Amino acid sequence: MNTTEEFYDLIATAIAVKKEVITEDLTYQGIPEWDSMSHLLIVEALEQYYQVKFDFNDIMEMGTVGKIREKMKKYEVFVEN
Amino acid sequence: MKILENIIANTSLLFTEASSGRTIPVGKLYRSLGLNPVEKGLLFLYNDNLLHSIETLLNFYGTAHTIALLGQKLHPDFKNRLEGEYRPKYIFDPQRHDIEGYTLKEFSDTVKIFIKDDYRHETKINPEIKILLSTSGTTGTPKLVKLSDEGLYQNALSILEYMPILESDVVPLNVPINFVYGFSILTTNCMRAGRIVCSDKDIMQKEFWEDMDHYGYSTLGGVPYLYENLNRIGFFRKDSSSLRYLTHTGGTINNELRKIILSYCKEYNKEFFAQYGQTEAGGRMAYLSTQELLNEETSIGVPVKGGNFTIDEETEELIFSHSSIFGGYAGTLEDLADYDQKPVLRTGDTARKDQDGIYYITGRIKRIIKLFGIRLNLDEVEFILKNELQGSTFACLNDRDKKIVVMYDHKETDPQAIKDTIKNKLHIHPQYVQTEYIESFPLSQNGKINYPLLQNLQHENP
Image (cartoon, rainbow over all chains, first blue to last red; front, side):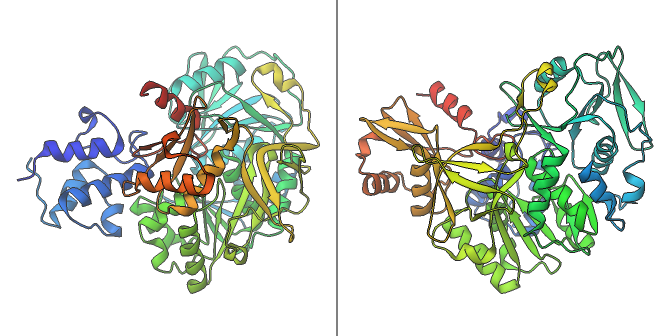
């Protein structure tokens, strides 16, 4: 089972913020660190770690941490709550 | 006010808010606030590229006011410092609900502006100064570039000579208009195109692409990072039927990406305009059309019409002349009393010109490292790495004239290949090259790598 902790870790590292900043409701462009450039770093980090490949629509619909979690279910990556 | 007159003369022009579809014709928008045309003073406009920002800009442009066009996402401390120094009569900032010493007044259903409570006419602002744009980032000393309506208009005319704008065009404001490049996109298209779509969405958001489909965007603009990101999300693999041309500025695009863009343009019949400009130039200085992208080396092309380049024989610095050049910097309110337009602009870039009159940037004057008495331009090192080792962006720093620090943002880049390239091309022993992977580069407000910040990070972790 994938843990929320490692999921948050990956995102925090990708956008270079402390892990405490990451919440389910954290929104793209909601903090300066999560911008169009770091967004792709999140995508790459998740792709590498969970061995998935996101398509164009997936990337566009990852507007919050919660939505990213949902999006990964499509690829059968389930992160425990 | 030449810019505004020419915008109003484009009588069929429409402004649309992307999110709501709310549309206002130019004839109504530019005077929607009922301002007094002879009223003078300073407006701080914190722009978000939405319709209310454009509405405020056009309304105040038609008066005797000077407009400081700033980014809405500026750090609050930076805003405070600027406001403390310039004590503007008006502040437009939808992000704030109150500002000490100011009262918020409703000018229209959509526009609210802060008015200074104890406003006194302090310094006479030179009437030539129409627009002030910021050059520095979110930290550091606020420095504003003084620009005149005449200069901005002359530069817009130069751009209109090559930009294929049609009166049927639908133009998204996807570059902030508080950057001179975004400002030029706004003014030139307001003068010629059919519809301006105001939006704060970007290419990583689904809404942006839905709006593009819905409104039928004719053009997109951006700095190299935008094109790198477009490439990563697969934009160049399919056609966007409404799109006719793309524009770029803010640094050269690496070889690999240049080829991808070129084949995209060929396959889907698009045009691409690479441009070279500076805030101090009042807009664009040079441009390169799609066909010229074919050249093996990336050049900045030829000067815009009305502009001229010379190269300083001693320093190789590129010097630009145009009637659009700025009228000096302002660091204090008192600096707004004069407007001193210089005949030439020293770009700070070094360049060379080939037999066909095409210009190439070879580096930047100040980023020099002296290794064992040998002068080496760090930008040239970056250019070489960028072209030799594709896939990564490189930033070179000077470590006390002892080492070149090469930072790269692509995990797969082999540090040994960096050292080998520098050794082969510049004959520098790998021992004097230090490589460091960085997840992402800190950027300054204009989207370029923030070298001072990078240098500071370097000092903190030696």
